[in-house]
Image 1 (cartoon, each protein chain N blue to C red):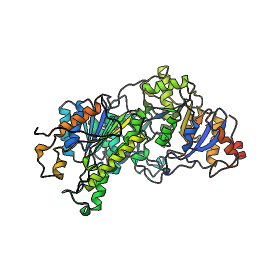
Image 2 (image 1 turned 180 degrees about the horizontal axis):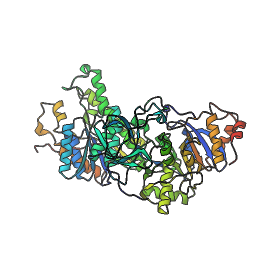
Image 3 (image 1 turned 30 degrees about the horizontal axis):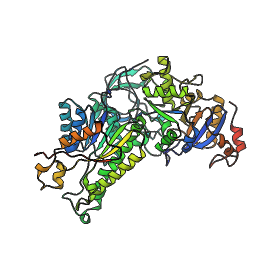
Image 4 (image 1 turned 135 degrees about the horizontal axis):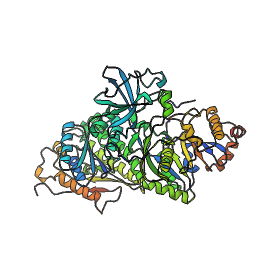
Length: 375
Length: 251
């Protein structure tokens, strides 16, 4: 696939593939058109987690290089404990699959990341590379050290390392995410305020997005690990109002789907409050809270594809995948976007696709129609 | 499955407040006054020692305070200030852009002001606050509430000779604040400019070393009035410029 190697000039102006599951149709737009694609009465639910600088470079007691990527708070062991995936020598420019393995650590071993120290509190039965790290000291010490020493998790396909500000959404608040909740990247305040003027509401929740891949097949098979979420009462009310009035709830990103559906399943009904979910979503899953999803472009090889498959027939998603590949959509964290929504407002746009085509790499309307498979 | 344990640090007692230039003068006094009013306070300042003292003073008075040693003019430090603040006290409900530099001291005529000195003054007094507001107003708009205060001066309005760099930076900050307020109208987020008048602070002594300190207001009293204004029933309209005055120390 065609990974985006750098961020776009304007965060809210990337390509958008619209998958209308009611009509079984695909349309290509730009994300600047989002305010027109949703209808008055719809509700956009975002993950307001800010991204933590979760990658720490350091050494073990024997002096071996190690990178720890924080992946989740260890809520069982409590404050100051984080689950971390360890990597050996090297840096982000190498694919994680190609990095040498980290030193094998035992409980009680210490790691030093500059002025920040951590102790191995436990090892996961899943993999020797997954450990619970305890950071001693006060909250001021922990967060001061983390923000001084840590860098955001980087991606080997990028042209340049990402600074911390570049991995934040425009509404990022609580620093809970260990990897950017990237589906929200194309949302600017221009777009959010335009949506509100059009009668589309927005609401927030916080979900501690963890790593989506580690390069270790055994570990990757276990991802995502249980993740914390917190859903405000106002968001629960807004969702209930929206459904009562016939509007649609659109989740911005897979993390929002996990939080909403995870909360619903754990508590019997969607309820306000904090929780932890280990929900894994795939094609057999029927979302009951979210009606649609705004997401990045994911290939069928990625675990996120499973979440998309809960919102659209797999046949239609495969057609979408063929289309985005054939037309060079950019994938991954800084890439293009996809909106899966029953009855997305593309009616007038349909004529456009028959006429001048779909954009710079446009194809004649007939070709598009050919690509659009039956659901 | 359910786990309602709080994050290590966010304990959800009281709203958070971020104050720049928090180790001395008005900033330190605002920290104390906001902590007394129930806010969980984060102070930002460049120098560690006075910052630690200011934090210790608030804690000794029973308040919650944290210190972040950083320069608001450093672009790459802003995301860390914002992230650490949100980790410690939650995304702040109040941001007070109080850190300022006078520019060259003794104050100089514009004709004698180095270009670099003007640039540095704008970085500290205008661009730093812009970056902090940009990072913090987003979550405020999403929540539908928040207060941003830019500390200004009558040097933003009057053309005092030798106050060129400082006066121009504060005038620009005020105009930026009015435009923020216009753009955020209806979102529940208010942006205010507060002119605290002449106070007995180190900045005042740097600017006017010959001044009679007994004629100057105590920053503690001004801070009390500002906090009363922000938390009281007669909150000023967003976008407005408010002059807050206290009596001279001697009176």
